[in-house]
Picture 1 (cartoon, helix red, strand yellow):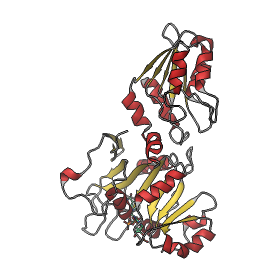
Picture 2 (cartoon, rainbow, N blue to C red):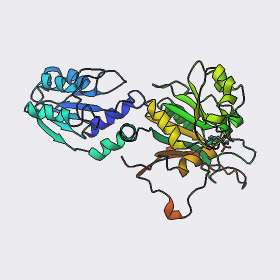
Picture 3 (cartoon, rainbow, N blue to C red):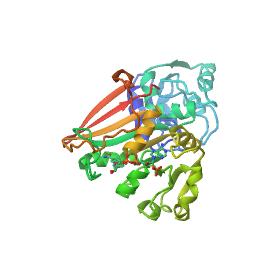
Picture 4 (cartoon, rainbow, N blue to C red):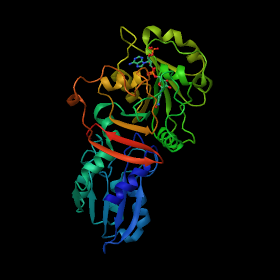
Length: 358
Ligand SMILES: NC(=O)c1ccc[n+]([C@@H]2O[C@H](COP(=O)([O-])OP(=O)(O)OC[C@H]3O[C@@H](n4cnc5c(N)ncnc54)[C@H](OP(=O)(O)O)[C@@H]3O)[C@@H](O)[C@H]2O)c1
């Protein structure tokens, strides 16, 4: 099952809003005879790849799969049909699939056909792997990753706003890889004004993220790199309904301008995430700056953080830290992480923490 989970993770960015799934087939003698994973949305499921690789060797064998096999006609035929046709004798599943059209139905079909079915092997790892899928299914909102690069003294930019570059080339390559695996890259108006970013994944990944700007006031520069490329890859602007008219130049350039209701210019992260969830966005990346990250943090809307730390000191009380907003009052008010992983990237460090239990 650990191997099947490893295979499943290869689908990140390719399969959403579908779940990540991996599968391994052992023959009747316990030899590994087939492997597979769900590779792209609409493509064959993990079981189908693994059973095809195993061929006749699957007969009497065991299928390990990280998620309950589907039992409905979606983009592809039911996986339960493929399992039954293969002659597999036992199916070991990490977790049931809460998707309404499956929801235990796949397990029931296999049991009724006389197969031995075990559920719950490495379940917590499987749930963590599919945290974004489970979040979209359970809440209608995408999983929110927040990313920033900061100095040893916790600064995003110098006191003059200069921030190119805080982290090293290896970190920036990781960010581009991440961008190519999420549904949206989100920044605040201040970052557009200061950096004129493109927000694309370079080189492109398996997914083209929508480039999203949050700007309650509607006061964005009329022309920038985002407007110049809005017809090449999507640009979305969230503003307050009252100010949407100010963004006519962005709309004319091909950006989608979404006016959200609300009395003042402060938009609720929940309303933004509801709209992104309606588009079936599964994973979104908030890249900053500090004001936008602060709004998401204050709203309890950050599920996972990627903090790149570079061995530099910027100093200066006026130089911004990564997360603004109101912040917590007491140390004990800070949300404890569910898990944290540390990676060394040359002389920089990437600290990844997950805050939402899945
Ligand atoms: N090192 C890094 O990883 C990194 C990453 C990104 C940015 N940066 C740096 O950060 C600086 C910019 O940061 P910043 O904090 O000034 O700007 P920011 O967060 O990018 O943008 C702030 C603006 O975004 C809009 N906004 C944010 N939250 C909102 C909400 N809840 N509702 C409505 N509008 C919202 C507001 O625009 P309106 O006032 O128009 O309503 C707000 O003034 C730049 O120097 C940039 O280079 C560094």
